[in-house]
Image (cartoon, rainbow, N blue to C red; front, side, top):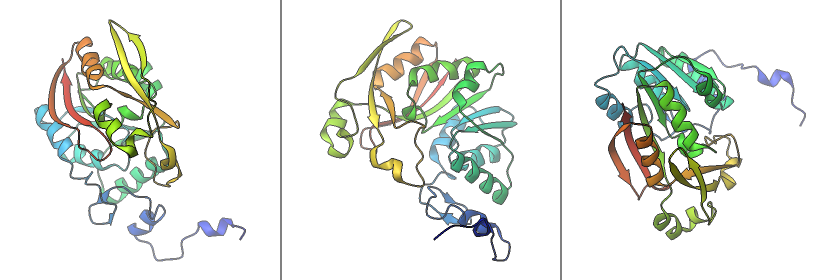
Length: 255
């Protein structure tokens, strides 16, 4: 059937639920008052832990990388951030953030675009940079860590990392990764990472990975080593090898 521009019109009476239905079936988050997905991103223990490590969010300038559907942004706003700059490259995710913001009425500045060139040229300094579920989607994760450290006094990070014992023991993970690592010299360190491919996940309308078909996962040793090279003190809040999507670590790094 040939589509028509008239298909873009909504004939139902106006309500906030109509906006959420634009992306029906493609939501990840459980949005307060609306349901939709299953992930508890609007009541996330990781953000509460970052808040405790920061001695509160109240009055702080926050940079958020990859807000997805605005759940963490909502929490940061409710925690009293003085300003939130939230950057999202995925157009669907960006529009979801605007729908959520319109429905839940919180303050944040959502920007559409790639945060990597933004960080490279940024002259502002933030009290806190949040990168939850971002680093393992990067093609150059070490470079992102260096860029975040350049613009922020502290970093709240949650990410997957490569652990050979775990990855190789699980068929659904092993098939996504190259068998040989990539080795690169960054500053004083030889950084070890492994290329992973998104495979069938790229076919889902709610895909929330990176902007290329592959990314690189740092090893735990390389991740913590880079943060040490940057002169950051690291506190680990959680480190698990039994996460369904692979080993994951929650940490806070500050000068």
